[in-house]
Image (cartoon, rainbow, N blue to C red):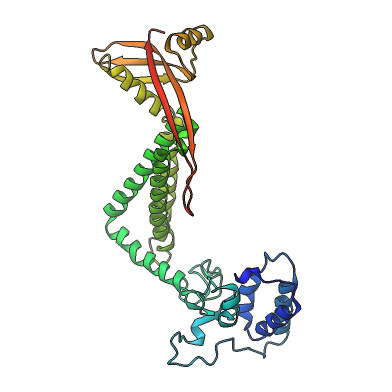
Length: 355
């Protein structure tokens, strides 16, 4: 790849300096940001020296690497609408055979730009502060501008039809709360359940819900900058963030940590009597003597003991000892580029009344 070049190679640095000398000042600033993480300072020194020179000689204005693009070229784009790729410096054809195609510009050598849709090319926001989207440069990358314009089209739809925002927000927050509750319950029961196939599925649903919620939040935050109701919309954005975090915390660690164990205990009791629900009391514990008696009578392997209360259809309730006993834990290694190792767990749940 491009970033695998030898940064101390004199020939490479000479060619790099020759390419840098062709770039205008605004492109040099972006390249300087890109190379700040270089392990050695050679390229940084070259770019900083060129920036100082152009600042001291403002009359000198390089045209860039693409001043003479032909209009009938396959990848034609106006010079004013593009910047040189800060990753490969436009050297895609000469370096492609050696390092592979530059992923930042997709092998074009330049990156298409567009007028910032937030400040409309002014470089400043409506309150005369520096535009945070383009950082005062007046232009941003075309793909980013396209995304922001989509947000700006969608945000008025939310304003005109608030039921769309309400329903979509409730759906995503509900999905987040549900996943947080199930994952908390699985982790409380046995942390290895998060690495089973079922755990991976719940995590995948959680990630999808987070992506959907992030899109809604970005529509409200980035799409409202040109609207007169922007302050009101930003307040809604903050409330949605608080609601999502609160729903996940309350439904998950606070109230949902024992939900899976309680459901399994209720299933066990329903096979013998009409149990409606089981509540686990995390503050209570089974005594050592009771644990020994239960181990001997049930032939347990690696048990965990909990105290709870079972409630029945006839209105009665009774104290129960709930036991989670893991009988086997097997790790499966899967070959493949995107394969994730997973566990299979066999276990037993007991709910013993009156213990």
